[in-house]
Image 1: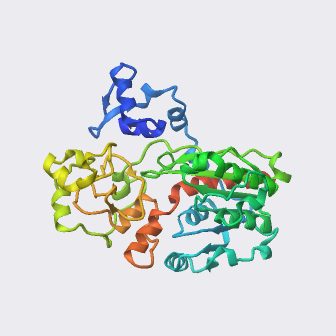
Image 2 (image 1 turned 180 degrees about the vertical axis):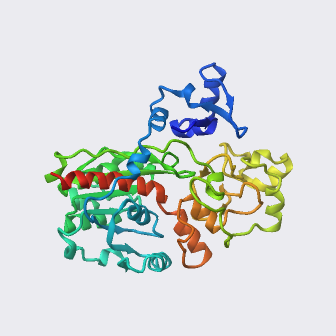
Image 3 (image 1 turned 135 degrees about the vertical axis):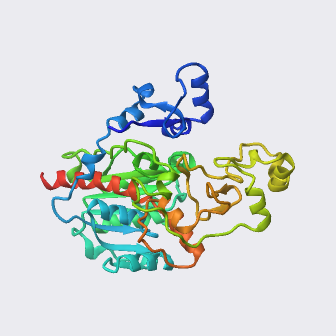
Length: 410
């Protein structure tokens, strides 16, 4: 077991509480701040024993789960494949993709360039006929967009989802009848339309003849991803199988990885991050961002500069902590967006005064360095920013492979 150390921020992120809450625990004497070999302040795991999330990391089964291998070649189909984060993670876990569908041309070029052998179907999912795959595919997945349903009040099951992209995922399930399927989404789906959206999804899944595992929000930082990203994962098993097997969620990695792990040779990569294209700041913005220390934001600027930079939002409430934000090498990245230099969600390099570049973006999402992104620079940022982190996808994929192995032995 690694000598695991957790910074104050790490603990807040793992438990889903504010930095202020952790601070109050320290002030009350619940925990004592320590300093590790790298000069970071926080807590050794011995202080935190008894917290379930920490115990799961300390007693992690990560290495054993890495050894999960398919008993035979399991086939899969993915919808809304984007730039390939989920598909690549599932491939790492051992899946054989028989078809991937994606609407965006640049993303399709990315998939075809990196995996010429993949059957990439470019175009609108509404026009894809899935019936030829009926009974021939073990697993279906897709990160469908979060959309409101035109919910009339009376439950119509499958029909309630018509007109949404979730309906197309549901149609694919109906036409293919895979043993298992997975949908992934933002954590906001839990509360979207006061929970109504998720309820319709649950009703549709039941109507399709599948048993939904209780959905979970997985934090990417728990699965060897140096990024504070969360995804809601929905996994459903066909009813004729569901009561005979038990799905087990992936175990977390031993420690929280940081931007240092993303950018330099170490546990994630065997070289430092390669050079690549990236956005640049206009001159005045660069002069202002030069004043922000590592891990800081607009609060670290002189008052007059704050007023100049924030303009109308200066007097508004809220922390606005994403504005003029410079990331820290000693922490995971904030969730990546589709562009690294948006005013409200700044993602400035920790040491250099510039936005994160393409390869840095890709590493934060745990893409391999040889995964080439196609299209214009903005299209590349978008593909990476929208992706499921590869290592998170692989961890989920191994749990699904383990489930299919159990099904295979029935």
